[in-house]
Amino acid sequence: MMAVMAREAWTDERLDDLKETVDAGFAEMRAEFKDLRVGLKDMRDESRRESRELRAEFKEGMREMRVEFQQEMRELRTTTGETQRLVFQTAAAIWITTLVGFLGVLATILTKV
Image (cartoon, rainbow, N blue to C red; front, side, top):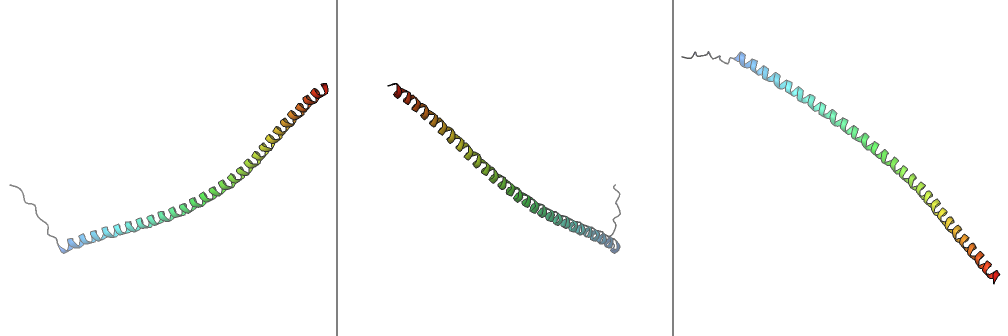
């Protein structure tokens, strides 16, 4: 035969102890949730601050790139203009040299005739 265990009765004192334990647990949980909310708010504020900083750095970087690009384009236009001028001068020199040579040959032929 099994021994029957004595069953304790829930006295007012035991219920009061349980209530205090449950109340303390909920108070601790509320404090932890409050700390969590404060931590999340701090993280959100930090994230917003970093986002503003990143946007400012991005805008500054884009501005610098735009200035550098414009400067490079000015230099490219200058170089292109100089190259075109050099090509034109070279072509003109070749054309004039060819013309002078042709006129020289023509003059030689005409003087011998």
